[in-house]
Image (cartoon, rainbow, N blue to C red; front, side):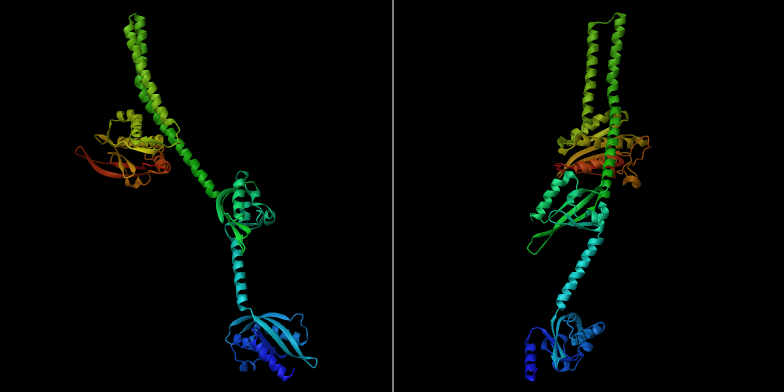
Length: 504
């Protein structure tokens, strides 16, 4: 190559967009175009006096690059034609360059090495970022406490993480190729397929569902599943991603709580039934006595020959009247035990009257005075359950009054009134109040201040359950001081608050 040709080459290499470098066989820089000078931040006049390997190649790569130059010098381009390596600028900044190498011969010998390069630093940074991100995602996938699996567009499982495999009991080899429907219970397959197809058709972007999976051992796995799609740049679905949270323990706990609640409801109903039977016995005692006495009287008069038609009619009327009273009592008590899960509109004062009637004999025998200040207010809810609540609270007041032997006059005050969009029902006694150390415990299940043979400790607990869960209401208790007919008293006040329009 002549001097003129060499200058023309150098001028051409200076105006190209790539990196161009000409080295001798020792790595000394014979030429570097402007792009190379800009990259390593060294002027052309200065860079011509430098050795490329010693100045710009990191120490851990020097031997590798020297070997590349030796191979090119030996005309062996098989392993050295394309090279990617890191360089260091004069200020110590790292760059990543992709090189294509050729040699120039003079008299049959390699005299120069020409290198054309491209700055791949940004590309390398992006690749490293993507690689790092993929590693993070893989770590999340592999080590997430949540189960994760990926399917194709037909629902066939392509990959599943360790958490999901542990949940379901399959190995990776066993689960691959199975459809998500293979581990789904039959009764939810149609709904699952419908949601899945909507995802694939881009009708929805994701969905969440609580469902059951079948494990390898045919056990039930309760899960919360969040399902979404992985799409390409054209918004076409590539894969389906499912994230699974195992809620089996939560479901079992909920079932246990529900079973306990049902047991408490049953126990409460049985306790109420015992109370009812005792009240029925009180209600029936007098009419049964009338019937028995009347029958004995008729028999005696017949034996003495003194039975007259007028007397017989009088006795029969008394028996019929007593029988009607017994029949009415049966009707009154029968309604209380009818299961009713349909909300109805009823007057809360009627509930109170029924509860009072069912307890009337016990209250009368204990000389308890009922003081009423009540309004007729219609609400929506479960009337029989509210009767049970009112009975529990009146019984609670009655028991408190019985325990306090120092009270001269026993009172239970009943207040029913409207407050905004709620009905307020207050039951107040003058039994001296509830001890502060137990006041916060009285709504706990099985908590009772009575001997275990006298109380179950579920009355107030069930009352709160009914009001809060079934009627969207509230109940609270406090001690209060008050005056009645010029005398000062202290007692417990239970306040019930129920929405008039109860839509829950």
